[in-house]
Image: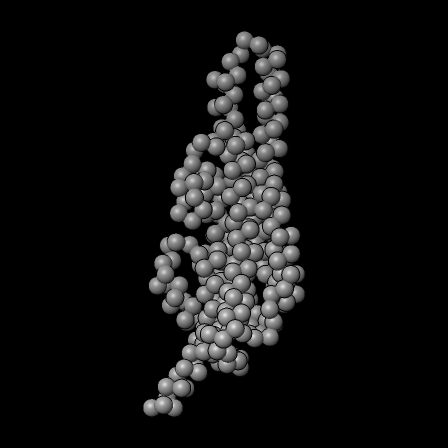
Length: 256
C-alpha cells in the first residue's frame, strides 16, 4: 500500500508540470478562452491533452512545494500564458480595426456586448466572427496544440526559465495591435476618406445643401458597400495576422 501511494504521488508530480503549461494556454489562447467553453470543458481538455503528451517525454520529479518547484510552477504558467497572449494580440487588432471602420462609417454608437471582449461596435463583432472562422479554417486550434506539445522538447520542464528576451518579444509584437488594425481597416477608411472629400466639395459647390441630412445616409450606404467589396482583402489580411501570430509563438518557444 505504501508503494502504491508513493507511486501515485510520483505520477501526480510528473503529470502536474505539463498540465500547468497546457492549462495556462487554454486560459489565454483564442477559441479555447471563450466563455462558451466553461471550466469543466477546459479541465477535461487539459487532462486529455496532458494524458496524450505524458508518454512522449521523460518528466523530472520536482517537489512543487519546494522553492525550485514554486519557481517552476510560475515558469510553466508564464510560458502557457505568453503563448496565448501572442495570439490574443491578433484578436485585439481585429477589434480595433472594426472600431476604426465603424467610426469612419458613422456607426460607432451601434454597439453590442460581447462576453469575451466587452462592449464593441457591431462591425468589430462581425470581424471577430470572421476571424474565428478563418482561425478554425486554417486549423489554428490544431496548430496551437501541436506547438504546445513541441514546446516540451524546445523548452523542457526544469531546464529553461523564460528570460528577458521573451518579454521583449511580447512587447515588440504588441505593436501589431495598431499596425494590424491599420492594415486591416485601411482599404475601407481610404475609400471613405475620398467620399468625405467629395461631400465637402459638394457642400462648397451648393451651400444650401443640408450636408447632415444627405451626408450621413450616404456615408452609411457607401461604407457598407465598400466593406462588402473589401471583404476578400480584409479576410486575407486577417489570415496573414494569424500566421504571423503563430510564427511569433514558434519563436517564443524556440522552434524558429
